[in-house]
Amino acid sequence: LILSSFLLVTVSGYWLLAPVFLAILSCHTFYHMFLLVPLVMYTYQSSCGQSKMYDTFKILTIIILTFAFSITLLKSFHDMTGSWSFLSSTYGFILSAPDLTPNIGLFWYFFTEMFEHFRIFFLWTFQLNVFIYVTPLA
Image (cartoon, rainbow, N blue to C red; front, side):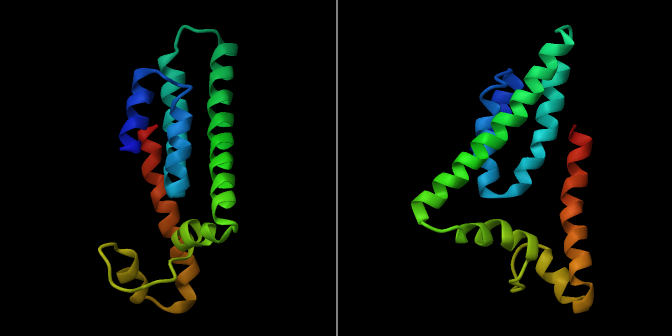
């Protein structure tokens, strides 16, 4: 629902509201932060005819608002829980994939079939794989 709201406000041209939804999405998983690139590209392309300085202002505002809202949300999570342990439970789990029990994803199967000394290489390869798919969207 939040992702569809983000896409709706982006396409509708509400470029000040889109960073709010993107920040909420990025608190769930950092993969959504990759949508900042298409957001900036779409905002830049949709404002053709405006002055160069106004385009730069909009892009910088989007980037700053996204990171400011993200930091504010992370800080509010810290204030509610009293510790930063939620970071290792969300972002740390995605980056390190420590639990290799069978699930619906491909990570567990791929990592159980490889040698342990290649683990870091394949973790980085899988993380880079997600970013590569965002590039054509931009």
